Length: 377
Length: 129
Image 1 (cartoon, each protein chain N blue to C red):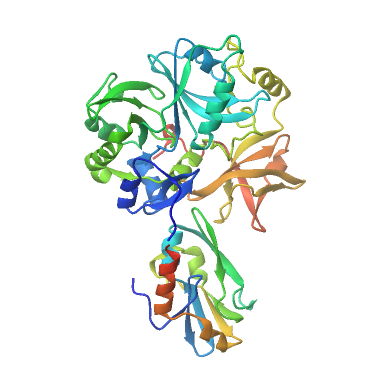
Image 2 (image 1 turned 60 degrees about the vertical axis):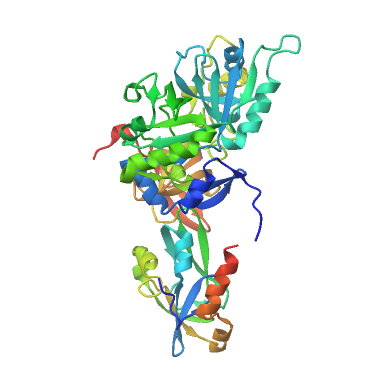
């Protein structure tokens, strides 16, 4: 028998009690699935699912220069946000390539940043290294809240019918919250934050609460939800975000990618009045145009295209897959990957992917593969 | 699910049913449970010659791909094409309708090295730790 060295979230015993298959995710022991991944996926699309997201990084920036500090390292425009707004943003280096993608929240007395589990320490280091010149350091502090503040998400069309009765009070009624906003709340007697954000392409909420209370909230949501909700593992989290065309750091995004080739130009405000790290490089990259572009594909077979697999065109190698999985909604394997720009229509309609020596035809499909506002049924 | 006592097993989770000099091969209930959601199966062609312990195909699930390992050497005389289209036969009926290939054995002595149902169950206990 071996001793695990993996970090445990405050919900680890809940997952084990539910019979989850656990895996190592960036040093955290996390549930990959509780049963069937496609079933968990469909539960979220059709009803509701509950996610333990405690592995993610939660950083709070406080002090008179908090906004200034954040504004100087993110690509989106913090100053243009109203209190209670949430925005998707990138953090890039001087070369304009991506250190992390994050959600930034404008709270009344602080800036709240939610970053990838894999990049939490890198983001902290980066920010500390960019806190102003040595003789004019900014008056602000960055606190890593990842241990004391838990993060639980409820996602799916039934979320709005389940969460309210698990929460004692919210400043803004949950059903009146705009998508991509955050409100103060009282959960299990203590102050908490609830954001209407998510990584599934469905309506839903992410709850930030005292880690001590996370197991009680987890159980309460499952009880109140009954058969309308199920616990969801990282396996379905991945197929859900892939269908929604959402990038994952380490796959679509990394230190060799810039926001424009990833289709994330909307999160880059080059003309924001405050200079930010990477701004000049991004200006140049935007002017030059991308040499490759993130593209959606459907595989014309049942074999699954996966990260790293080469995409081949009539003239040779045309790109590579960054993520792929069977899509429960589309009933076929889907993938995202970088495709070189400048391919002619006849080349685009003759693409293949090399799946372990087997060449399977690829169909280029617009992203996202799935959109809840475009639902036909 | 009862694991049939009259079958032989491999440490890589295949089972073998012997009838004369023909071995029917599939994967066990344990393999099915580990894979969870089957996405694709790749099987050999009729007539292919297989060597014991070599890869005869692969089975893919949402999160992984696993090689299928030949438990005995011989020629593939039949392939269950039904499971290629209907993967759920493998999940619902791994020892029966979910069979994969039939091999005409070239060396039946190889059966001696396979595991009994009991030995396979014991082997699984070591895998779980």
